[in-house]
Image 1 (cartoon, rainbow, N blue to C red):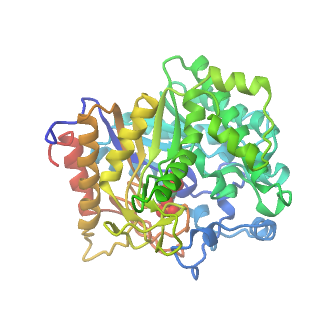
Image 2: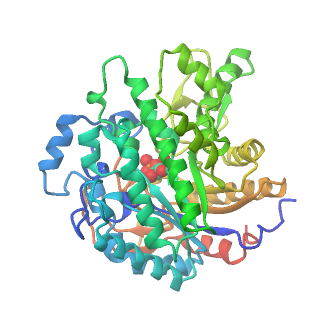
Image 3: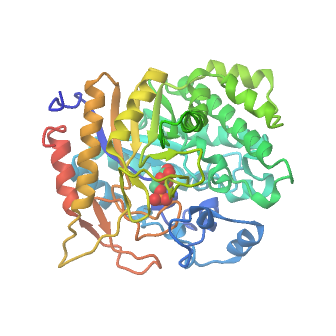
Length: 485
Ligand code: BG6
């Protein structure tokens, strides 16, 4: 069974996000985004994601006055803005069938409230899509990947305010109008479930501006606005581009019970349900009753109009995508070792190895995730982020990265098994096929790529691109549609 090929037309590729790759934060008419004020904190433990993503009014104000990129690596990215042709050619050389990328909202609408898009921004993406077409690379476009215009965050406290829905719909409609000839696959919100873990990155919510005692309620209200906006733009996309596919995107935080103690099993179930509920709304068009009941018990009152409920129900997604990096376990006991994951803390699994950032490596967890998601949603699936952050060393111009090859090989084998078991998985885009700035820690040294970028955490380096050993390995996998595994 495991030697079977991947389906014909399987979309092999990679995924990047504008705020982590483009740089050019103050070029081409772009406005500041929430990513442009994220600081690199050299002295904070890399396993302490909460401290890395912490932000407040004071640090934002200081960042807005700072015109340099020295402390703000996402302002620099890897200069994809100027080097996209070279980078896309390298993806083409690897044989990419697809590239997932995002549109920087503030490149099109610098403050988020303009009536018309900034045409220099529009043209940039048209150029990128044309370049991809030359290499037969299909774009998968995320409309919102951790980068709303900072002005909306400051003025409205981000998505907490309902008015942001209109701003997002205007932005998305412009994307559909201008990029229609190039883009079939769309995603609305990256990791839509991440709003509670890092409200500023995900939804422009400045924590010290939340009402005391109502923090959770306001965050869920913001989430509700995102879900309604997601349904509205799904509607618009289907109208404007009838052949389009619009998907949701979930951080798949696969969690196992730490032991078979029923309390561990119960806690694990609740944790997994809490992970699913975001995608449930986008697939089924309504909030799960258990979520509504939990909100009620916790005194959380989310304002929802009948029109909101109607739009959610009428405009559900066509496919389900997710990121998968690691798994964790859950336990009712305090006497357990905790371990960091993708902006979440779980309980360490004694059977798994971990990366240098403490994320637990679990290829079987990818198969489990695919089976669970397909059984639950019965929609085509796409793995749109997967990979391991690692430190690489350049030796005489070579980068030997057997650890990365091992990680991918084991994950691909599990993905193939899930497909052979009946899961309709239509594509796979590895995270950061070229080294980019880390979302959580803003490091460059946390590298995911098949392509090395000569830049350190402080922005020093030539930005030269170099092929790692894994580059040739992935090229082979794609060229043989997985038979080389
Ligand atoms: C995902 C995000 O959560 O994980 C990406 O969608 C991010 O933007 C990726 O880069 C890996 O996380 P990190 O913090 O290692 O960059």
